[in-house]
Length: 366
Image (tube, rainbow, N blue to C red; front, side):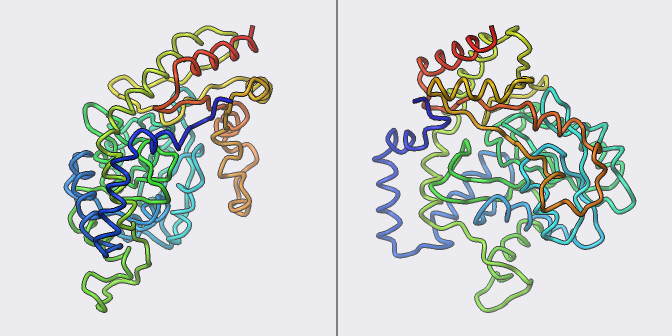
């Protein structure tokens, strides 16, 4: 059996370091908002190339609290991709604003700047590009559009830890960025976790308060905040993993390059494309084919795990059935939902496993 992603392998590779981190935290007697969290925030901000990193409990909270820090709420609109994980939309909904979908570029899967321009209205306050699957959204034209219309740009960087756009890392490309440390991410904790990165000191300060009951000083609550804190254990574990992130991303890149080379020109298979001047980190390797379900079944019969990211576009989810979208409003998102399939990829996947995935995919399509 070839797992879609082997999460245990990272622990086995670095077990002594994780065990040391565990004992360091447990023996400290301090388990929330302590030295490990502060150290990770400093290290991750430096890694991303931003002045600030503020950790929170998960990626959805990172998006939501960032929107709140920019005072985005009822009556406001935020432009989001029509093809993304639903958390991007939910964050907008949870602050009382309205998500306004824009279609993606089907080659890169990421939001199309030309479609963003068409979606802007007098109520638009922000643009939320998602660096989906570890590919980078085309940020220069997005920032230019935002500048002309006086809009905030909030990166959803949940799937792009370490990716580069014009030699700048994901998380440092907009006004702020939200990150997820869900276990399956390139930089994943052993539980949920998230963070906001920004160069804006006032936004960082607001998020710090909002994550902790609206408080900077104990029992003094300046904002109507929530409880959204990364615990010390997860911060310590993330500090270990951060030291290996570039190495693991490079290993993902080798697998992606083999897929791109060996699966090129096979039947009607469509392979992912990267924008020039970007360095993706291949959180997922997503192919497209009209017989997606047939390929998935064939690979499953061969003992190969795959997943679909994502089978239901947000505009067709029950949560958004009352938004008044026309049945054919987002044809690109609908087509992607019918045709995308994620092949196994991860830093601990063996060359033999990758070769078997390639061969079985070819066997199905020839």
